[in-house]
Length: 493
Image (cartoon, rainbow, N blue to C red; front, side, top):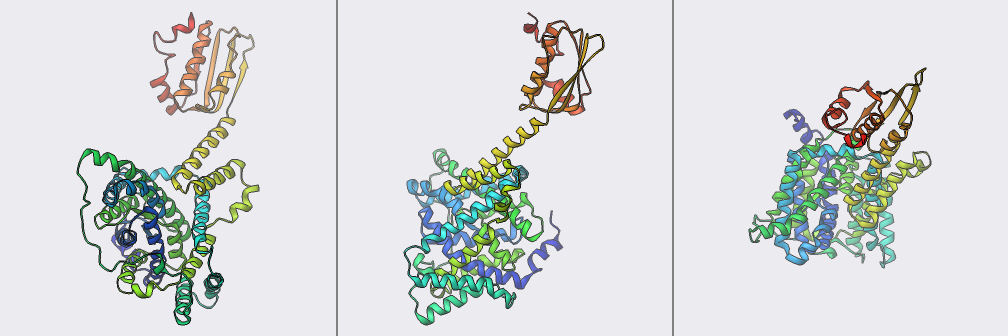
């Protein structure tokens, strides 16, 4: 639990940097929120209201200071079918339910599952997002005038060169101001934020989704809500880890789950769509100097201020300026060292990373990519541990007693090698199975131990198991049948 003094520091420990970075993020959020609304098939104001609401609320109740949460493509694509078949009101209801599920996940402390996501999966996730961020800019770079390319190049030059003059002002903000001024003063004919869609002109109002409160309605929205809840938390946890690494500060994953749930639940009641953490905007925030909760809060408040009060000016921001910023984000997000390390890292780690990237890029679904990566990581890990398993044997001088020494982890992947190590045709009076250097993990390994003992007993040998540690002894006592009366008689016949 964060102390009051620490929480206060998260708000006011970096006021100037947080306000400036919040302004940059707010400007970049506008076209993205509109684009995500279009993806979901709803009015632009649905995404803009959501981005305002989620950012402001998560600033108070989130577990990762400095991380930006708003409407995202990851959640928007999951809602397309629901909106098409049932309309906006069902989307709002699904958003509320998704938020409630996320609160439940947080209370159950499911954020701890992130420990099972390997570094290779994380790297693949980051690289895939960098590629998707860049690909999202391609429509703004295809079939446009040469002037657009000039402005994008000028924007990138400002972003990368201005910090050599001073870092007091975020270079992405300078990029937006300079290119907007040039566009307005010289009347340059380029695509602007206003061309993305109409900005709202009124504050959001509280409303209850107009849907039948029936079990049938619940069954309609539940699959969408569950998918949004899981994907939203997955992207949020991944982004939190990345911000942790960038800032060398920890985050509270359980609180972040609860915070995301509160933000989404409330957002559904003001006409907004579901959202989650945004890796691109979070990196913009951190690289622009944002570190605290104030940066996230400022991004949400300034977003609402700009679309309501400065809407006419904001609509004139040239898209090349925002494209330049997002290209900078994609370049900065991609782990270039992972390409160099392909030849040095273990082949299994490289396969996991590449599989995660390919799956995310081709499906545009972060959950699929991470799922494939985690499954492959588990398979490779089990295979590697199974290779370290061996069984050796030592006969007595008279040849009537043999001791088998088990070394390594006995689990489902090593049971075949375990059974193959025994010679059941050898006539013995006594067999000792020494497991002092082994650990018995699961039902498969207990079943293999049972089978070995019963096969030796079938031929009249006295079998003794020695050296079992307490954890192994617990699972064997509970599940094994070789030491229970009447069991394994079918092997004796």
